Image: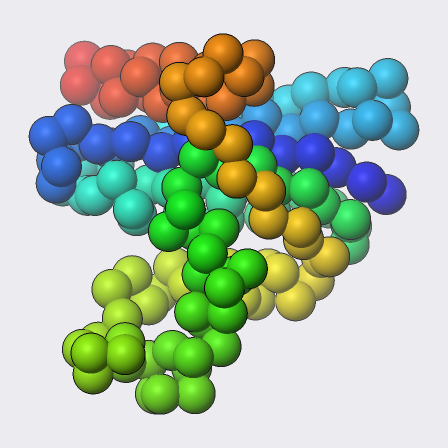
Amino acid sequence: MRVIIYTDGGCSPNPGLGGWAAVLISPEHNHYTKELSGAQPDTTNNRMELLAAIRALEALKLPCQVELHTDSKYLQHAFTEKWLDNWQRNDWKTAAKKPVVNQDLWCRLLELTAMHSVRWCWVKGHSDNKYNERCDLLVQKAREKFRK
């Protein structure tokens, strides 16, 4: 089964109250869409970007071919530029020999991507992409709801 996913995460201030969102689209089921979102206090933009991808992949019930769109180059490059491979090989240290930030979330993402075939696609944020804009709106709504 093929699934198209758009994700976004944000925080304001950074660090501060953050939100994450995902839109899952099933082309094989008349483009059925499912929306997910949530918020957390005292977090960062990057954690929310990672959590959006995690929650989207966790929502899949069966192994899928996933096309995951993100406006986070941090998230995309970790997979496409093999940063994760290097971090693991270096005992979760960066090239500067510092501990990798968000290791807990990266480990969860690695577990999930082992179950699915994921193609990581970058989309420019705030550029009139319908689903990226929808995710951005869901992030803002999740943050507002949490604040109340």
